[in-house]
Length: 143
Image (cartoon, rainbow, N blue to C red; front, side, top):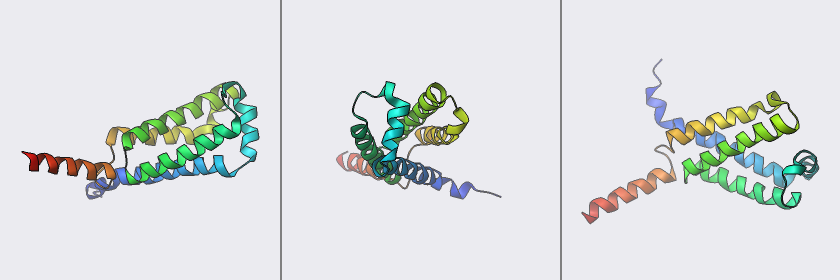
């Protein structure tokens, strides 16, 4: 079966699913108060600010980053940040604290998807592509 005609949707699909992942991670930080207890226990040696403030800041940041990824706004930057978050999840809780890397297998899939999107770019159906088209049009008109 030839899927070549669907390749233009590849980045869109990655953006939507990875963006939703970020939004759910952010929502979890904001909506689940018991999560603060887990973070105190698991990440205490790595926290430099109050845990509730950390969860508030990173919860909001993850929701905004997820929304930006879904619409394709600075997609490569958002992808790089998501890959970094996933790698930190693999290393800190997976290898250092809990020492149960398979428990954090979702972080491997997330990091892989984020790195693929980082390489691939935002695709045709994105804010980035629209901005690039405008730049090209302005350059054409100016010359």
